[in-house]
Amino acid sequence: MLEVEVVAREASVAGLALVRDGARGYADLVDQFRRALVSVALNTSEGLGRHGGDRGHLLSVARGSAKEASVALALLVAMGLVPADPAGPVEAALDRVRAMLWRLAHRA
Image (cartoon, rainbow, N blue to C red):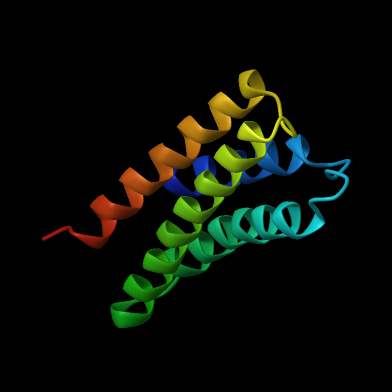
């Protein structure tokens, strides 16, 4: 298993734990955050198992989902629905995943 897959999985699990109880009145945003996290882990894993254009497409989708999850997390923190302290490591892991996926997609 490549490190990017491990980090994607860990970031997703940690992010899901932050919103386990939901956020009253903001179910749509919490659901979007959850779906983006799931997409990061699943598309990274699936993309690593593919070749050619499929691989690049799935890794690109995973990278986009990691960006989406980061923005959703920032909004949840800004609204006071998720504490900033535990959100910080999740954001750092998502940023790391994006960097690793970018490098994989732009390898010579």
